[in-house]
Length: 219
Image (cartoon, rainbow, N blue to C red; front, top):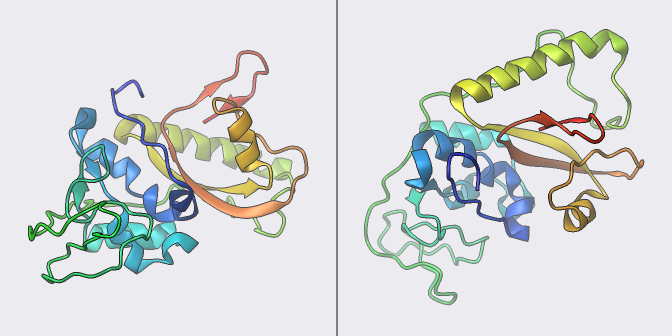
């Protein structure tokens, strides 16, 4: 549990590959539902993305802003659109946004209209003059000329987190990503072994610190 007494829900493999959707719902959950009074579900975002094949974080946030998604409780089974990792048939017999999963008994169409939760605004924290990393050269260390801008961007992220809560960020992940966390679930992931870049992964930042033993800063 985090310091604000919020339950940690561990993701399934399907949620990991649909991280652009699932993790876009996490920061609004913290900001809209204080102290675990509710959760925002990610199932609604699937038709607007590539489902379990991933998606764009920006698209998820735009859908969240314009359309909204339903709320659920900590079991991920309440509400008429609970998270089902793409197992639903997608049938909506009452045409009210509620989709049944009778074969898996994970949800039921109650006939109740979802109560959508929206975000009032969203944006990006981008330091002016700091170019994005080239996806083909993610192992290349940034030049010294960009270090000052990097520090300013880190500070802006920390200020935003202190003011408004957790951040939704997307990172490069590498071939050792899953193995590392299976072996060191509380470790600090820092890919320096030269393993190949497998793509990207969206996560939720809830805080930061410095490792006492190594002096390594971490999120």
